Image 1 (spheres, one colour):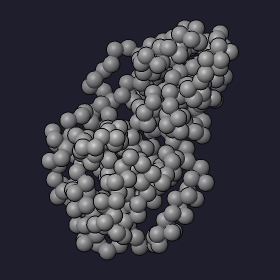
Image 2: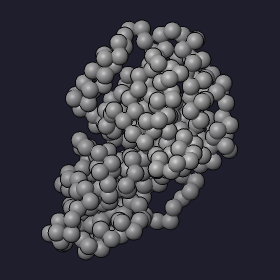
Image 3: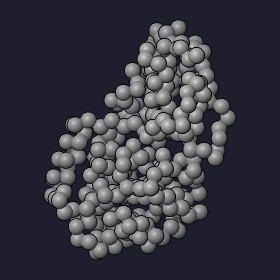
Image 4: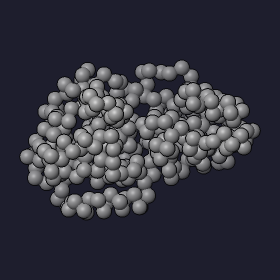
Length: 316
């Protein structure tokens, strides 16, 4: 029987990878009534995903050596949800017994893999377990989004808001390079986003585009706004929880294989995802639902505007 009371785990640095952990964290917390589940977040971004998460008792963000020293002997068990050098180093410093994730199953979604792993550790049947990701925006997050949309004159009775995420994590990482700042194999070309938006707005005058992204993608936003000035530019204007609150205002969200995709999966927004060479089985929408469409081409840049356009029209 699983009777550990104080459990520690470590989440990855990236947004999507941390969201993959949230169903497993919820399952761990359900092991029994007295479980204390603490998480070491490897980055501030990872920690932001866990704000308000009811399954987590305490989040330690990149804790100092002194903090770790004080916690030696405190935890009954460590759960290694991602086998990285960072995770192993933290577990070693805590001097805690650890259960490690088995060999990766590449034909399974990473979130499902983590959930099945935790199910085996706590000896729980997960056949009917809720697999939704956990993000917990509060009233103040919703209020921020409401204020921004009000500033842009959005009429919620008639306007149809369609979200477009213009970049990807890999594109943001290469922002310091002088060359190819707007191209990446996991990013759909900005020209195609602009063409898609123009076609949609020509189809229905009530359609308004909302663009999202990180600060490194600001130049993409500027290019987009020059061609689509009625769009609402929220690039680098939302936190993770505010982005989740925004999803509830959208009719549809169009996004490639990046962290914002997984934020959308924590909500019920209609989702059109675009994949190139990476595996949608491994890192695509989770859990699979009828309103989550995956469009895939071996070379993402070759995915046609017409294909994406037709799917958005079907949603509307």
